[in-house]
Image (cartoon, rainbow, N blue to C red):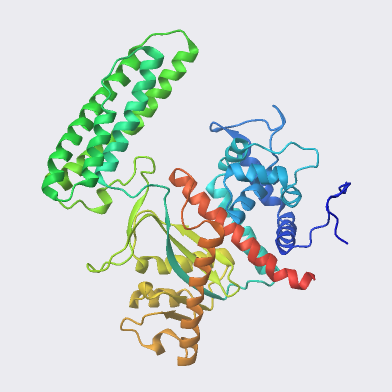
Length: 461
């Protein structure tokens, strides 16, 4: 029978028989077995402004368990903090997973962000290792057969060009000086509009000859803005005031100007070298964002006719036969894969207490010295996707084992794709290098918990 209108709705929510709810319930069970993880998060939440505070004092905040589960849920669903706040207010399943009571007011987006960001990267890494050990204890992952590869996680920046970086410098410094003018009446000449016009003209120019005079004018604007910003910072520091609020505003503006001035100077310097003097600036001396200055330039293919450049950080990860990611390391700069192979196996030895029996790597890790060093650690079979002058008999005990490990290595490409599509590991949206590393660790943590939960669900059923 089908009615046109329901006269009365049910007073109780209907039971949810959905695979997503079952997975979250299984993940919750895994987290319940890790009270030490909650204790680590609680310790981080008890630190404010670099000093420990008494958690028993002050108004009630989010519990450590709630913060841990919120971070995992965010990376699992890919929701922004704003959408996550709505989901926690609307979804009984998400509220149950995050341990929010029926009558408890859901946290706001700012409360979610502040609490999650207070958990340190060291804590997330320790919790990740706890989960890997739990996978070993449950028989999901033995750690005897591993595969290692690298991926690039992008920083949350726009594609860098010299003109856009100069425009960023001018507009940010002008914004800070405008605040100083509004609060303290300090005067300056605002060249923001002129800089914007020059940046647009450069982007629309069709030849190097057209761009060069435009760059010359944009550089002059940027240098004049830098001089004004330094003068404003000095005037703010020379002010004598007994107004505590004014003093705090002044100190905040000085700190921000002093943060951006060196970055802007670096942008001006590299633009003069690249554009005006036609000098090749090494990647290690470049800055590609004044907002995320830690960002590295990653060239994936060094062939001149076919290169792909990304802006972020190289992430080296190791996964086992169960697809559980047993280790992940965020690298600074763009180190060659070759120099990372032995380090990743040594870390496996630390995590599991013994080296893996078999290890498989991408071709970029291949090398005679790596083969010798890894085998010296106790690894029986060490296979590289590309042999690079190595014999099969040197790497594996037989041709059959060599072929199987080469095929086994290919599976990590699927793991990387899963992390990118399902856990936001294609682009990091958190600011600062420490937050970048924390973002990667939380994404891997959410992935590992889901993989273990899916392995245990059929058994539970």
